[in-house]
Length: 293
Ligand SMILES: Nc1ncnc2c1ncn2[C@@H]1O[C@H](COP(=O)(O)OP(=O)(O)OP(=O)(O)O)[C@@H](O)[C@H]1O
Ligand SMILES: [Mg+2]
Image 1: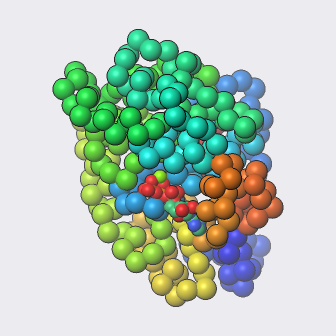
Image 2 (image 1 turned 60 degrees about the vertical axis):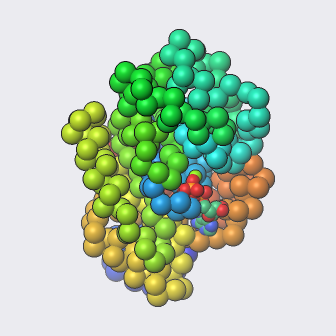
């Protein structure tokens, strides 16, 4: 990752200092699990578009799967970018939308295996854009996704929900279903704009719907250590969130657009690439923090 050079430069004692200004740990390879489930459910959330939610869902999911975790990725965006990024054609197949609309429907009929071992997906397509309108008059409309995921949580170690860039009913459903939330922030101007509203939404969900939801971490993405503003933004993010900022920082690289087009995670497309290594490290950090089994 791009931060490595900087980390090495700032080396003090045994542990170098990473891009977030804290010691830069390698994090150990997660121990093998004896059995699987119940899953910890994590939403990737930021109402700002294009900050790396889907890219992180794909590559974190693939990294955790590589460490032997059983992973379910949930596409919760009508754009279907997560499904496409994992090589799933969503035309005329059952999707998460069908599960939201019909509580009797078995999620197993909708879950698709991906080309990555240990990684399954609940796909979405444009149908999902009608969900907010359909669900708005439902009883307990905020807990519909939670009820769907409850049926399969026992079979997975982690469920990652890729949210759409909005704070509407779908995102509230994702937060209500989740144990934790991960906030990707692009290291760009205005990264922090709107984050207060996101935190407020999480607080409201905690107050009213899901008392135990925790902030699992803030992930800096598209970091470019060569630009002053990227470094300044990261500094401001650390000022705002302190230790909630994950040590792992995802560098900016053109490999991601390439990997999305090919429909496979970067960890498969270019496993030695620093960005693939960064996502594997993120997976290890989340296990070390106890956010994932
Ligand atoms: N670290 C990175 N370096 C360079 N480009 C990246 C990086 N991460 C993601 N991208 C690219 O940035 C664009 C937006 O990323 P992504 O789709 O993951 O964001 P998102 O938050 O899911 O967007 P949306 O809000 O539209 O769902 C994509 O084209 C993706 O390939
Ligand atoms: Mg997305």
